[in-house]
Image (tube, rainbow, N blue to C red; front, side):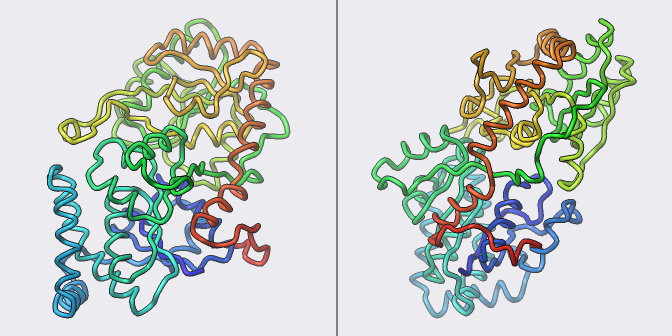
Length: 426
């Protein structure tokens, strides 16, 4: 099956869930062409992206002779279609100026790719993110007369809903990664038939993300994520200071990079935290080993407010963390007890009953509560093991990429069958 995939940027180190899905589809025999709205901003961090890079196509928005030529071709040959596409985008987005201008910037590039797909047809166009990738995918589908499907993830649903309901009605299949998202999208287009909008969790390769043979001898705290205020790393450092004050033996590793790195390193120095290490970004090939060498995973996230630029947009939400953080799935798959805050979608994977508890909740921005939860786990290896075992069982029950990629393949119109062993190297 020839699949044209539209993404914001490929490869992108922060969108490993998309990379995993594309790799799994390639293993199932899909012939992929990846249309990236932006060129990569860095060399591929994850080795598993390398086999897919030759399938990626890039195009300047405006300053390209081929973009201009393709747009003129469509404008001259089918002025009615060109005007309809442009007019629809303006009609559906004019209430949100930022969305409108970005959509207009994407439009020439999408026209070019749509014309190319007329010459080299695909069986399906599939867009990741309901914002500008799906706008481009819709334009391409209209030009190439190819069915469109889409995956909606998180901020692309809640921060600005310009053109969103229209896209839901235009797509032959819509996937989304949480039950909360599913309910929200169904309300936007309640007339769509059952099954048009489907739940499809992000999957993991459970042969790679697996528990260690034995837990580490040292109590090691791990947190992974982009170093942003909403991730709560400052609260984790304050909790580590309390553990150190109380004589709890621990090591803490923070994986990731971002705008707060210098500030967080200064905070750690100010608190005298000699047992806290900042590793920076790590590849997906290295991360499973880091998880398995840890005792507990922490994500002290906060909900927060949308950016100032977003607050005036239609449908602006007060949520920042919309979905299930992939780092929590990875940690649970590796058998780590997870200590986190009550992010909305976590109810779909976290059980709180004592006999079935597979993670621990703490209040947001409460370093004392976080420190108390960590101290309790540090002193009770049996409880750590029990929570971790139940966490593994939950991930294996619903997040095996061998299963989730089959759900995606079915939504794309292909038979659902196991990946081909002859393509296992992809």
